[in-house]
Amino acid sequence: MKCDKCGAGISAEEKFEHSGKTLCEDCYLDIVTIPKTCDPWAVHSAKSTPQESDGLTAEQQQLLDLINKTGPLTAEEICAELSIDLSEFQRNFATLRHMELARGFKKGEQVYYTLFNDS
Ligand SMILES: [Zn+2]
Image 1: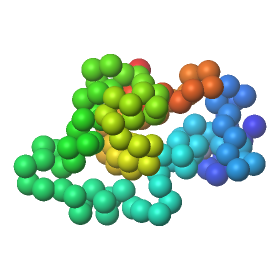
Image 2: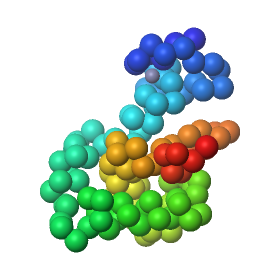
Image 3: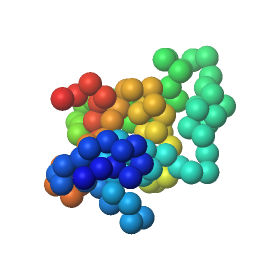
């Protein structure tokens, strides 16, 4: 079995379905976590101000602190904890993922989010 997007070999365990396509975990997470209407880097640089450490916005830092402290968590848990909606979470998470600070993984039928270097 192969990923329809990047062609990587995938096992039934790692298989994700999206819009009728078979995808590997990376491609699936790219699609579900990156909003189509905006570039996470554009949002990131537009929002950045000098007092933010490591170039993260306050929301991104809160998200990172949360999964560092209590992760891995589902998107719903993170949204409830931080009082943000799913699109805000996806936008912030996409930036963290591109910076290789956080990542998602699938456990059973749920997708969890954790630190990038968490095993
Ligand atoms: Zn793929």
